[in-house]
Length: 96
Image (cartoon, rainbow, N blue to C red; front, top):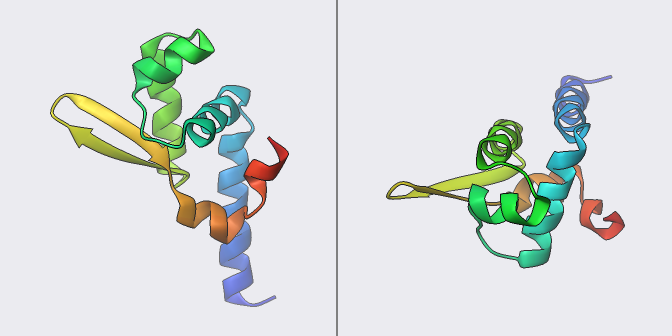
């Protein structure tokens, strides 16, 4: 096994660990279906979760490289990191 494959395997393990939490999959589904940046509050309303809970999951998704966060004033906007999904999970959204 070469170093590139080992690196890819480690990256996949990190991604799968983050995706083992059902709320995070739900958050990704909502972002994918809405096809736009969304706030913690907007996602929380759809999942019936507190804004702080959604923010906690946003952080894990961002750290795993699955989402992008853009700050506008006091508001954080989350979107799907398409590059990560294309590279590591190209058909992920086909099964949601």
